[in-house]
Length: 123
Image 1 (cartoon, rainbow, N blue to C red):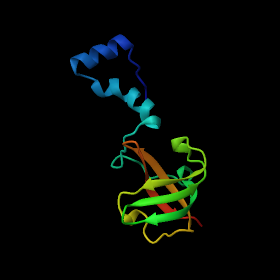
Image 2 (cartoon, rainbow, N blue to C red):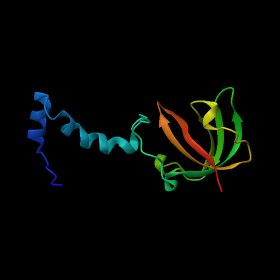
Image 3 (tube, rainbow, N blue to C red):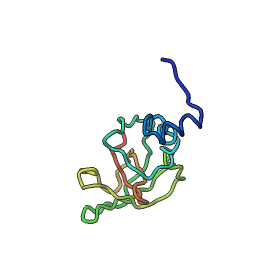
Image 4 (tube, one colour):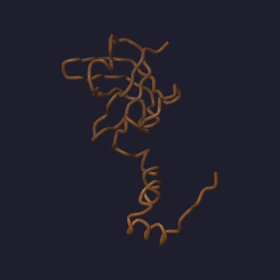
């Protein structure tokens, strides 16, 4: 497949004309993915095991949907190891996991808060 690159003036012209808007926006969207606060669950690909972080549940409150994890480095968030509180969308995300369980999880920053999107018991 041949890639075509547009110069900045051509890309700007296309953007102003309303044609090629997706081409003009694609590089900016790709560049901001690693620092974005937007969650794109509907378009997200399945998370490979390598993208999961490791941790231990220290507290789970299904009433407030708050999950406290003592975790190692979270590479996708560029976060060092620590203990912190995460939110979950609903109790089914955590399932039957409980404090003391070693887990692997995927966390994202959504609207300024940290959310666990996926969590599973570590083998």
